[in-house]
Length: 531
Image (cartoon, rainbow, N blue to C red; front, side):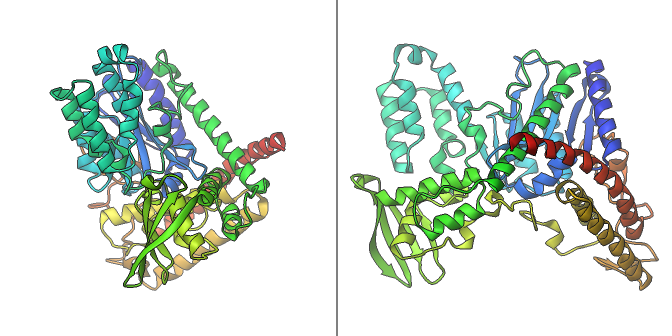
């Protein structure tokens, strides 16, 4: 595979040359390399949508010629979005640890809230070590597939077992799941099955009812029965390393166009309201089209759900919410009228970021006419990419540590990329952006001349901020990074001046806008096609 690896590396080197914010790294010798890469757009998008991710290794099985792994997430339309790719010719535990360390470095050290993986021991070990504060979940459909394989004799002779197993897994409460699981084992004589015991022991990592207190965004990967939807139809069992990059570029291009179309649909269509509710009108103007439809369905269902007040204590009121004729499937909602906050036992908002019908029923009963801002998750809104990110590192207290310097510099460069790719669609915007950066360079020069730099005082005439390129301590002894910029270190080297960095960014911005011009022409053509 060495020729194929060299072909991939050639493409990555070219991409990095064209855009220094394109990041890639390799581990191992050229004949058996592990290669990781993430483009500038993905690094930028991660700052907005990096709260929940899927690490997919389904292409790493022996059924495929190329062991291809991907990091994906969800954009504000609920579409899959790419956060990095890897070719894993060596799939050892150490290799996966290296991959996650490298990926985490590339996205400025910001861990996601949650991650969904295949139930693979090496991957789980890597996630536990590198992302200890991230909630880990097994892909539910991968577990289903394994159950079907292990219990093939039952699936052939007992046609109802598949539906019954699915019903058990989709239980709405822990008590319901425990009861159904016990009956399932008893009905099919699986009480003594050791493998089913291991599946049950891991229930908190794959059964939805145990995971609903954590944001997973109602991930597309789950609804797509475990397939890698981003590359579905592009990467096949016959894909070789030589054609991988072409398939990769096609997938990226297609999904970019789909996002443009979704943006266009959201901006140029008036939401069709089903009720006279001010809350529905508010949501229609804030959410993207697809997310509004999810909210609208929850709001519409409040017409069939009644909220009954149970008790009040300490300013907090308990409500029982149930659908007509389904009192046995009620939900308890806790409501604080002073803060206009409510929590529901179904935990839909915590899990998906879209408020549930039960809380909305309570709001309707208490005459809450508009949705409180905390229930309008920005990552699902039309303006998801405007303003601050999910967790802006720049808001943290700056320090002179190598880690902080790396993050600050990386954020600075990514912000320039965002301006170039998101905002510079017209020459007027271009001029504003250029003038702002040039003015920033002058102000930084003035601060420097006063002997004080933002983020810390100057020591021995040196600026504490090094080159605005990622710096990294290699996690494995035999690892090496091919990005010349990534080989930059901080300790032991004379630090570059922040002024020089901004001046370079101003110069590079011309190239960014040249690229943006081409993208805008493409986007304009797409708008014409859509219109």
